[in-house]
Length: 249
Image (cartoon, rainbow, N blue to C red; front, side, top):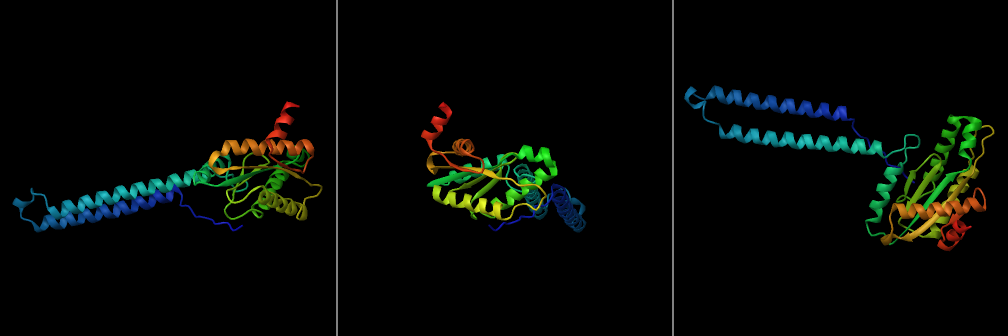
């Protein structure tokens, strides 16, 4: 999947640029006012110059627009940082929830959600350390990112839990995606001595007109639980009757 990287100016840079433009504009206005005043007789200095008044109004409007544009850029930069996972660069849980609900609001006919969870991640961290655990997480994130479609939403929701959401497909397409993920993980196992790991995957599908992030996550989590009851490194598909039986048992 192709990834587009957007450069975002830092708030400090935006503030500096705005201040420079405002200073230059104000200096220009003062210069014009001084030139106009020197050309007028003393008796006319008390009367407002219409041209200067118009120029001042335009400058004020320009500075206000500049300020709000700068504010919007800073807000976008802050939101980007608040909705990204530092380790993988994927959306975090907050970003995933916003992105999924936005996608569902666009009249999606059907949608699927995959939950991919690294098996025994705590054991890996305990045996090999946090740096190895981070490497496993980053490696899994890359495998998922390379296996999904351009329009799919990918996020890291928790320690070793990832989500893939799609509004273009059904359970069969979701299964194809899971197979690609598993194939990449098995073919390109990490070149770290003694580190081998597996993942379990839960799949949920719903009508896009009658769901939201919370419902999709609940169903996919139930499918993930079902997969782990059966076996580690397994794929589970959400089935209401099967889930109810597991919970009753």
